[in-house]
Image (cartoon, rainbow, N blue to C red; front, side):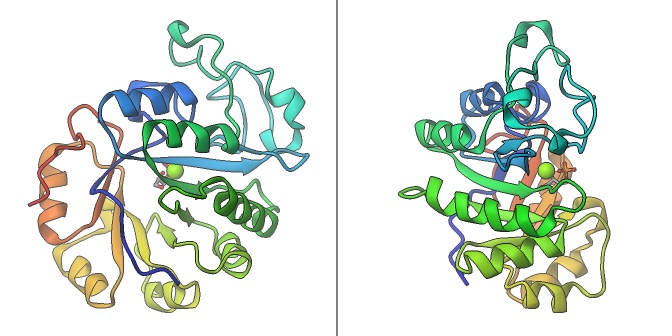
Amino acid sequence: MTTAWPYPHIVAHRGGGSLAPENTLAAIDVGARHGHKMIEFDVKLAQDGQIFLLHDDTLDRTSDGWGVAGELPWDKLVQLDAGNWYNSAYKGERLPLLLEVAERCRQHGMMANIEIKPTIGTDDETGRVVALAARLLWQGQTEPLLSSFSVEALEAAQRTVPDLPRGLLLDEWDDNWQALTERLGCVSLHINHKELTAERVATLKAAGLRILVYTVNQPARARLLLNWGVDCICTDRIDLIGPDFPNE
Ligand code: G3P
Ligand code: MG
């Protein structure tokens, strides 16, 4: 298990937060233009195993396609528009492959939190394939931090590339956090910030975990969480909570 924590205290959610169409190369460019040093994004598998970025199970909300994304092969997914739903200025923006995102991160000198979001029924395969790809694609860069709400996907990642850092995602507090993170060899807990109190932060830190919180869009709240000892703020307001947001 990797114990080093090279990651900055502010992370741009879905690449460019709310300032660009989520999980696109354009979003990563917007994050970089705001000076961000690390992005979070969501990945899943196409029907033919290609790894690409998308948050939802279905294509409907963030593209001009419809239906379950993971049931389509990449040659169909690549034809979709993933920018126009957000703003016509982004018309023509495609769903990106993880391969392209790794290259864009390299160009911008940005670190990555790869959230594994498997299509239903593909947790093990997605965890395995994403971990292998992450190891290969990020060679020579700071290791990406893998995370997932799926315990099965994290187990597969752990089995496949044990030394890539992993974080367990929780949308609600789970009293079983310690057993779970220990079993999965996690370096971090990634949790909905609304679930945290100063006491919970202290308990997690005492157990040796790093803490990433999402999605924090108010500077005063970010300030409080950092004061409690949270390590990373994942934000949609990449303009208000920028890379120079004070960390003390
Ligand atoms: O990884 C933090 C956050 O992205 C988890 O929630 O739904 O925005 O992917 P979601
Ligand atoms: Mg996410």
